[in-house]
Length: 241
Image 1: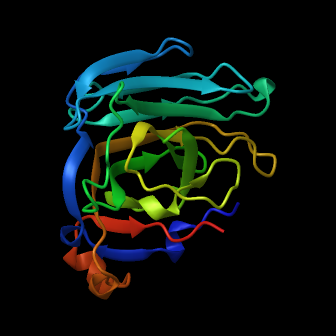
Image 2: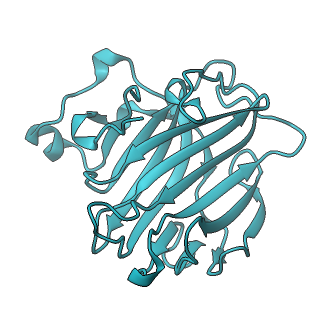
């Protein structure tokens, strides 16, 4: 699977992307500072979801922190602290997970919506920025999408179209997002690349929204003029190949 860099994406005015509802505006305070000790908050967002903040690393014990509405007011903040080189490969995943009990949700709202809108306000760190990973459970099947934050200019709105989620583990299947039982978004590190160990990073998100992508005719190509006219960029993920 190849992750399309942000430099190849299409830019549009944020006003062109219509949000139908807010999944999470991060007004509810919560914090996780220890792997294996998630924090659960009920009644989050317009869907009254049960939100779980958690993190883990498949190779090491990560030094990390996730919080909502604490480091910054009404922000999700994911911080991966510097890793000990003796620990080897670091692949920490810092996540916000949403569940909907016994009532799966129609994220399209009868066909009205077709994308997640992730308002990213900051991405920084001493090494390469991490990856935004989306995961969905729909009618018992699992789907995923990847977005590289390596070239993002903040603030930006990352647009993750429903039809670009693919069956987990490299499958080609797609999902309708009409019966969603669980959805999560994670910030995950690059680990060791070309002998350079991940040394820490911070990602800050303002809101996670659901809405509709404008028609192709309304997209504006990235240019200096676009940058001057729009204070927040909109990054739309193309097909993953």
